[in-house]
Image (cartoon, rainbow, N blue to C red; front, side):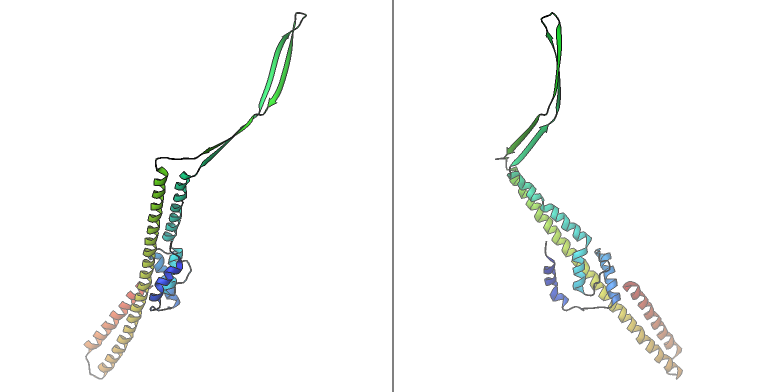
Length: 237
């Protein structure tokens, strides 16, 4: 997988032309938007700059971490496939304990018989070692190895695509945030201008230069501007 510093190098040219800091509210909202868009597990981390947001996304995104883990698991298929070329050793061991008891009857010269009993214990134990080496298995090991290597290349390509998607989502969310902040600031300044226009219109109305209709139109424009500010705040916050 690509190291973190390589993404920083790629993005350094763009980052230099972007704004390097925003207020604390922008940082908190950026983290929230990144979590919703990617989603990104940023927690309490701050994303004051675009580079910082991308670093946090690259390190903490759950989808990206899951893809990394899946790629590492796929890498293990190659040594497993290569194991077909290596010898196999099997070791077996058996052991136990036996109880032996024997009773025998023996004839004696007096015409009778005598009984004798013998008992004891036996502990058999054996160890076996088997070594096998496959010389030819119909190219199965070679084909399995090539299949595992192809799976590794596919997993790495999927990981690279996931990285690009996560970083794109992070950039999109961050730039959308800057856009919404600029729109909100513009709408607030527009309200200030409309308030000044309304004040001037009322002054002119007081001296008879304009009619009440002009005052009503200025008031309507100011109300529309305030409505746009509320809409921009609802999007930004």
